[in-house]
Length: 266
Image (cartoon, rainbow, N blue to C red; front, side, top):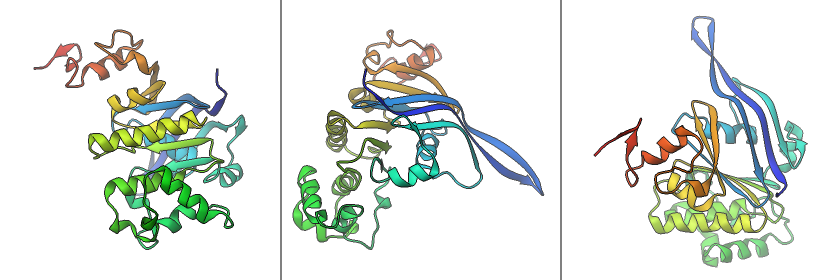
């Protein structure tokens, strides 16, 4: 059994909002979530919009809004991920691949963005190595994001996130709107990272892509973790899935039985 890199225990995330006047209300985003990601593992987190997937990533990264109340415990490599430790590890041991390429600075050449956080003495050499790894021409380093294609920008995002010191990567919806070839390229990069011993938390709506690359799949709904299933169980009619919600989610795909609530739609 590989060592847990990330352990989340009894995580609750709620938000305080003003309803009318000075009255407030509390909205629950995540309730009682327990999850772990192991060294060299890709754990996919799937679920509908609003199920709490991105909130989980934001809680780990410490980027929730000020009106968020977070309880529970998040441990990274066996130690509690406090605010102080988060400041030391983000960008070095914990890396984030955002959903949108608009997270890149439009006013900075992409080569400079990849070099951020690298040792100044070796930054250019490391940036060249990363560009070669992700199939980016060396000339692209001088270009700005608007001068690159969507596929190239996605590769730049990977290059900005990968460091030799990284032990955990959180990939938040890295494949939306991409054609099949580009999706496979992203998944291949994630597999390579896991093969190097990095723990990968893959947050996605794309169940098919998730089960093709992950070892385990965590299913969320309404802010709760419903079940964690082996990725290999998402096959055929889903009879090998242990939880009925996971089976219904799998069978509801058009390429499967397109069955909702036990009723098949044609």
